[in-house]
Length: 222
View 1 (cartoon, rainbow, N blue to C red):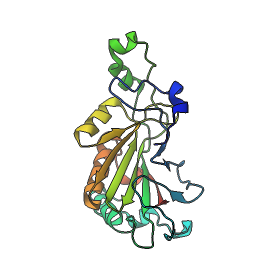
View 2: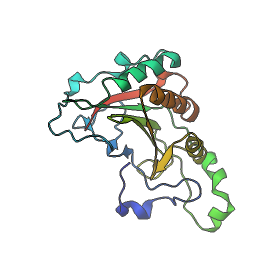
View 3: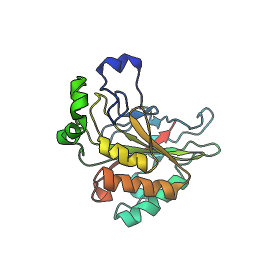
View 4: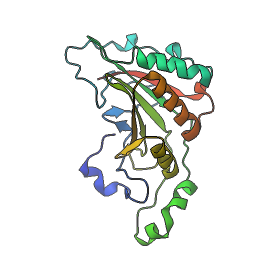
């Protein structure tokens, strides 16, 4: 997630259980576009990926639609088909860049009550800024890398409002996710493990009832 010291004054206090800085919907340079929109360049840079100098970058028309390569008919079909994509075309290889898959939930999952019950008296006495839920939908960014599959989950939006609540962040931490600024990050060794982790987050944290409810985008990892 991109951020800079210039944003510091407008950031919510990172302490009290949700360490993080003012977020944007970009992570590791990945900008999460509006539903159905590709980035202007057609490429999505991400941390841990190899430079694309001299690497073939497919044109937008060559990018697969997720629903053409991943089965959105059920969770049981979603996992293995996503795993196949993440172990195949999504991985960078000789002469070609990898792919980044963006998945967004159909609706926000954080309420004001979720945030207020975690503030506590100590936070109020310290005069910390009130936490605010984001009206934007939460999502995941899944990046094919040479050393595995990286999954990033933005915690805050560009205005510092919560896309993911403190309870969800703590639950993800217990499952092996690490919070880096305003993004929960995990690097999985292969497509099967990554697809399983993605499905679990979508179902349990982002409350997606069915894969067909997802908004999705496939972009080139730059």
